[in-house]
Length: 401
Image 1 (cartoon, rainbow, N blue to C red):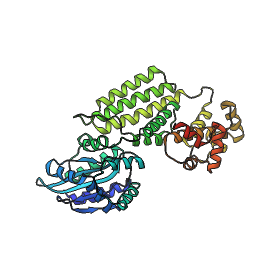
Image 2: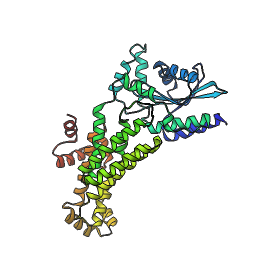
Image 3: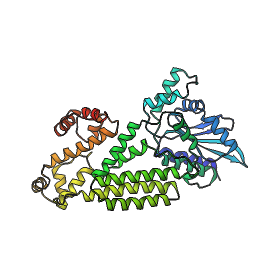
């Protein structure tokens, strides 16, 4: 097996989808190769936070893929190259972060390394460089590490074979756990999408999954933590769907079937797929049951289209074409059935989405205005005030109390 060629292809492949870099060290800890633009800085950090010594020890004692971490959520994936059972090279991917770091997270995490002697200049460079580090979902980072292991050994492993306890112990055992308020905000927005039956949920769901890594569970079964987290996820989504109008009988029956499927899953990928499929299923069922029976199919189709394309410039003429009517007749029909004009409906739908973004993200008012196609912050604020009775800033401050 041509390991060098495999590693070249691997490096090229992961560079297409992320900013996760590759590293190679000798058994003595000397850096042999890296494609990281902040090579010197993160090489120092890898050693400074004790991860290099731990990785080299693992290479001499255990082998196999591992995830190592710091007290503020910075992680590396490590694996080893052997020649006739002799440890030859240490291979690394990273660094990445397992959730969106705030300055508070980093400062608190660095306090756990108060015995380290670093200059203010290095600390400033390090904090600046952290802004360029990607947030990686556990499932994505795990897949990259499994790919690296395959390139080195030709062995196909499931995510359950990864040892992440060392990373989790460091992250959750010594540092302040992630910003619980931020997690709560993201989860609240995710559940509101279920209650609304909002099919344009993907960005909100991804944000929540990035921030929260699930229920912390310790045990010998590596699948216990993702399974338990998925069962909890199913339970709260099920309740949100009932609040959104889905019948309790249908919701609980559906939830039970997904819980059973999660418990029967054999791999990490199976569990993750079940969670995403379940969420989509509940959202679509709520969406169907919330459809207004007074709306004709063409008008309902356009209402759904509006909610799915809030970042686009939507005109009455485009929607009329979608419905198969003239603009004049469709604007009359739309207002008769919904009780408001097309423009007012679009504005209300955009403000509903803006409220979720204000509650669940750190996007600025200007960024939300741009994302929803308002043109200017001033116009966005005026429309928001007209509908909600307060400005976007006032709404965000009130929700964060």
